[in-house]
Amino acid sequence: MVDYEYMGLVFRHISPYMWASLGCALAIGLSVAGAAWGIFLTGSSLVGAAVKAPRITSKNLISVIFCEAAAIYGVITAIILQTKVEDVPIGSDGEWSVGILKAGYAVFGSGLCVGLSNLVCGICVGIVGSSCALADAQNSTLFVKILVIEIFGSALGLFGVIVAIIISASAVFKA
Amino acid sequence: MEALYFNAKDGFLEAILRGFLSELLTTSDYNNLCECETLDDLKLQLSGTCYGKFLQNESSNLHPTTLVERCVDQFLDEFNYLRCNSEAPLSTFLEYCTYGHMIDNVVLIVTGTLHDRDVQELLEKCHPLGMFDGIASLAVAQNVQDIYKIVLIDTPLAKYFSENLSSEDLDEMNIEILRNTLYKAYLKDFVTYCKGFNSTTSRLMEHLLNFEADRRTISIAINSLHTDLTVDDKMKLFTDFGQLYPSAGKFLATAQDVEQITSVLDGYPSYSDIVSKMRYDGNQMLDKFWYDKEMNMCRDTFQEQFHYGVFYSYFKLKEQEIRNIMWIAECIAQVQRTRIHDGIVVTYR
Image 1 (tube, one colour):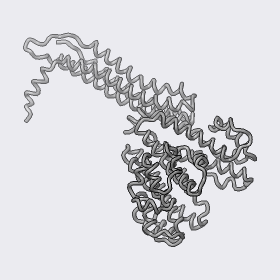
Image 2 (image 1 turned 90 degrees about the horizontal axis):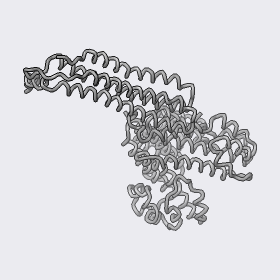
Image 3 (image 1 turned 120 degrees about the vertical axis):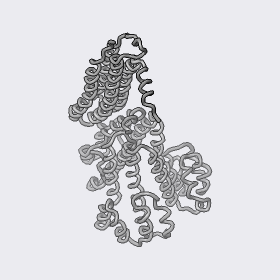
C-alpha cells in the first residue's frame, strides 16, 4: 500500500527551509489566535459587568494583560526562530545534509510547540477572566482568589516558550 | 464547549443581565419596605433602589397600581435594552419569553370585551411585555374564530391555534380553556425550541419548563376538581411533556378530590413538599409555595455561565419581585400590615 522508501525520499527532498518558515509562522500565528480568543472572551464580559459595577474595570484589565502575554511569547519565539535560519546551499549530491534537515525540523517543532501551548493558554485565561469579571462584580473579595487560577493558566504558555527555546537552541543551520 | 464561543455574541448581554440581577431587592430591603407606614414611605424606600429613577416623577398621592405600573416600566426598560442589543438566536429566545404575556393579554381583552368594558381601559391593564401590533382590534372580534382570523393570525401565537383547534372547537370554547390550550402549545413549542441549543441551555431550560408544565398540570387538576370538565377535556389541557407526563395524567384527570391527587403525586419525590403542604394545609398559600420553588430553581441557573437560562430566570425573578412590591403596597394601602410578610417570596438574596 504505502511505499515507505518513496515517502522517505519525498520528505528528505522537502526543503528544510519550508519547515523552518512554517515554524516561525505557527509560532506567531497560533499564539496571536489564542491571545485574541482570550481577549474577546474576557473583554465582552468585562464591559457588560462594568456597566453596573464600574469599580471592577481597572483590576480586571489584568485578565486582558495575561491573555496578551500569550501573544508576546509567540512574538519573542518567532523572532528568535527567524534569526536561527541561515542560508546553506543543498549538498552536491542533491540531498540536504542531516544537520540542515535537523535544524529545519527543530525550528518547525519549536514554533508548533509555542503556538499550540499559547493557543490553549489564551483560551483558558480568557474563560477564567470572564468568570472572574462577573464574580468580582457581585462580590469583590473573590477577585484575588480567581486571579490565582488565571496565574496558573498563564504559566502554561510560559512552559511552551521555555521548551520551544530549548528545542530551537539545537537548531544550527550548518552543513 | 459553549464557553469557547458564547461570549462572541452574547457575553456582553449576559454580563449586563448579571448586573441587573445584583440590583434585585434583598431580604433587608424587603424588611425596610415592610416597615413603611404609608405609600409615600414606600416610594421613599424604593427611590434608593433601581426603581428610583422611574418613581421620582410621581406625585404624592400614589395609588398602589400606579406604583406597580412604574415598576413594570422599569422592568420593560431593562427587557427592551436586552432585546435591542441582542442578536439571533438570543433575540428569538427573548421573544419566546414574552409569548406567555401575550396569551394573558389576549385573554384579558377578550374577557373584558365580553363584559362590555372599554377597550382603552383594558389596554392599560395589559402587561407591556406582551403587547403586539393590532392588539386593540381584539375588541372588535365577536367570537373566538374572529379573534383568530382578524388578529392572531399575524402574531407568533398563530401556530398555537392551528395545531390543536378546529373551527368548531374555537366557537364553543370557554375562555379559560382557550388560555390553557394556548399555554400548553406555547410551552411545548418553547421546550422544543430550547432543545436545539447547546447542552447547558437545553438542560437548564428543559428543567425549568418541565417544572412549569408540571405546575400547570397540577393546578389545572386541582382547580377542575368540582367542575363539569370531562376526563378527556382535562387530559387535553395537561401538558404533554414534563415529569408528570405520560403516566400521571390519567390518574390526575380521574381524581375526585384532593386526597386522590396527593396520592398520585406521592410517586414523584421532587413534588413531595407540595404534597405534604397540600395534606397539611389544604389549598391555601399553595401559590406562594409554587413561587418559592420556582425562585429556588431560577437562582440555581445563575451558578452556570454561558447559557440562555439566566435570561428566562431573571425575568421570573423580576416578575416575582414586582408581585412582592404589589403585595406590600396593597397591604399598606388597605391597612393590613399584619399580613405583609405572608405574601413575600424572597427572590435572590
